[in-house]
Image (cartoon, rainbow, N blue to C red; front, top):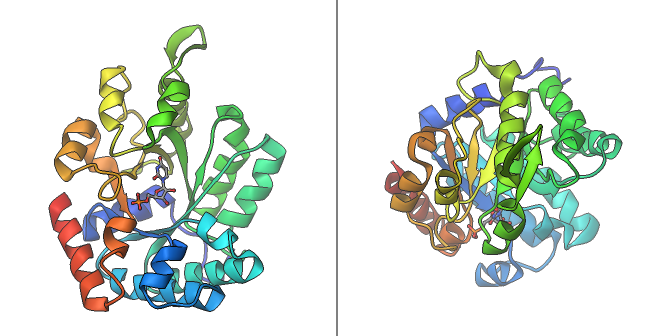
Length: 287
Ligand SMILES: O=c1ccn([C@@H]2O[C@H](COP(=O)(O)O)[C@@H](O)[C@H]2O)c(=O)[nH]1
C-alpha cells in the first residue's frame, strides 16, 4: 500500500467525484489517425503528449478518465510505458483512472491481472478495471477480492454497447434454478458482490451497460439498481447515443451512470480550448 495509506472504497471515491464533476468520463483512445490529426508522432512520445493534453483538459472538469489499453499495447513496450506515465499523471491531477483492458481468465490468472491493474503500487495501478465475466462470473472472485483490498473497482461487461454483443448477452439460460438472460444473471451476481459495500453510496463492482443498449435492460426485466453498481455507459457521442436516450434507457438507474465518451470529445482536438469546450458541452448535455 502507498505511503498515503489505504484508499477508501472505489464506489465511495467515484460517488464523490460524480457529485462534484457530474457523470462524464473522458476516454483516452489514441487512435493512430487521431495522433496524426493532432500533429503527434506515431510512437510512445506521441502517446504521452496525447494523454497529457487530455489530462490537462479533463482535470477539474470531470472526475474520471478511461484510457483504452489496446491503443497503448499496439506500440509494445513504448506504449505501455506511456500508459503507466499517463495513469500516474492523471491520478496526480486528481482524476480517477479506469483502465479499459477487459481482462478475463480463470480465477488464479485473474488474481495476477488484478494485482497488475489494481494495486496502486504497480506500474499500471489504476483505480478501476474493466473485466469480462465470460469465463464464468465466479472466475472474477479474486479480482473482486483485490478490488476490496486496494480500494479499487471493477466494471463487469454485462450489456455492451456493440450490437453483436446481444446474441450472447441476451441469450436465455438457467442460473441457480432461475431462468434469466446471461446479462441478467451477471447483474444479479454483481449485486451480490456489492453486498460488502452496502453502507456506501455506490458499490465498487460496477457493470458495463452501453448507452446504446441500456433500454434492453428494462425490456428484459433486468434491474440495474440492486446493489447500487456504478454503470459505465460507453456509446454516447461517436456511437450515436444521445443524452435523452441515456436518461430514458437507464430510467431509475440514471444517477449510477458514468457516461464515457472518447472520439466524440477527442475529435475536437488538438487545440486545448476546443477540447475543453467539447468536454464542457458534453457535461452540460448530460446534466
Ligand atoms: O461496451 C463497450 C465497452 C467498452 N467500450 C469502449 O469505450 C470506448 C468508446 O469509444 P467512443 O469513441 O466514445 O465510441 C472505446 O474505448 C471502447 O473500446 C465500448 O465502446 N463499448
